[in-house]
Length: 347
Image 1: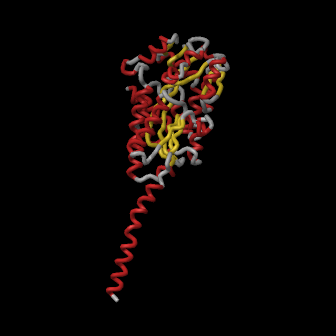
Image 2: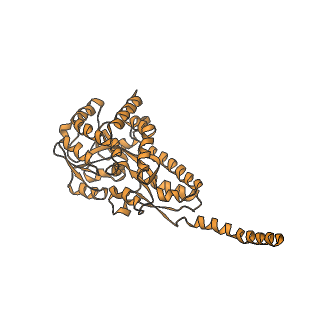
Image 3: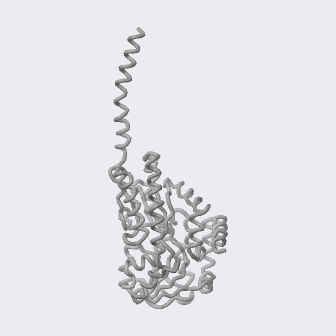
């Protein structure tokens, strides 16, 4: 009896052993042949370039096991960049590089980056994303079934128009200015006497070429990449009124489907791509003495006006009611701590 039981146990073990390999294979086969990565805009702007670099890194470093394909221009959501977060939660989008402006209608705390003249320069921006507040904002995003893996940067948003230089709030009066998303932007421009017009990035270029709008606000790198100087945008003011952070994210359900090692790989690739993206977004705008992007605009016939701190303060005073109102939406304690972090960065 004992020998028969022993023999039977051995046979069962032998029968079970081959199953271990197929189970591992099946676990690997659960990975999809393609994962969709959404980003607004397209190459060569740094925000989009960061998405392509992230996809390439993940695909290459995983040996093709995790195959990311970029869908630029927010094409997975019909060009409406404000729907990317919702689409991600619905399973339409699996990876994304967000502009925080575009998700701020759904995540109110992201309006922190859009409080007028809070950050002022890149030192203030870095103090936010690299400190406790950046970690807190990550946790806020994570509660939306999305896993944030790296901070990037689309850049400080400067203003251009076809009619006149902008040096004072009075110069804004009557200008039709396009903005991407978020009621806060409508209120900021209204406070300055402009006529804000919301539209997608896809609609912006034809609107500028036909004169449907007088101007727009975007980072310098995007202005150059899309040749806005050829769309009658011959006046550009560097005022750093808000910053547009980039956010590298993965749908939680998708992230959970990967092995721990592959999750680490995805995060490492995101951080490397984000680092390169931030460097690209800051190239040539005067940081570390490099003004090549500004000089390129001048070569294209663009008049570049750079505001000093006193001039920025004048705009800040006009838009202060908007700031105070939206500070309550963002969270007064969060804003207070952000202000302290920015002051510390300037000290």
